[in-house]
Length: 96
Image 1 (tube, rainbow, N blue to C red):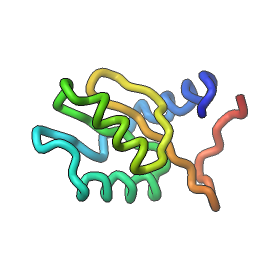
Image 2 (cartoon, one colour; image 1 turned 45 degrees about the vertical axis):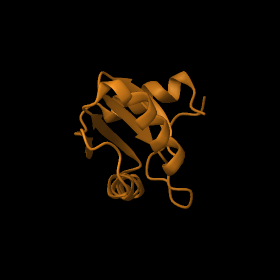
Image 3 (cartoon, one colour; image 1 turned 135 degrees about the horizontal axis):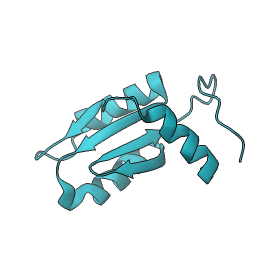
């Protein structure tokens, strides 16, 4: 779980990032999940854009469960995920 201070820090780091995945009318596919996992391994902090606002919450929860990523926050149809590398974290976040 992230503290509010950690969320604020990560949101500031994610501000300039472009979404690495777009989830459209086809919904969430295995290929999309695979790409999200790959991007999390590379970058640790990513943005995802979901154009289907009706099922956005379900898609978010599914991604969090399947990737073990932490939710940093949402801005409209864009949500931010964070998953530190357990062996070699590249991003140092503040402690509580």
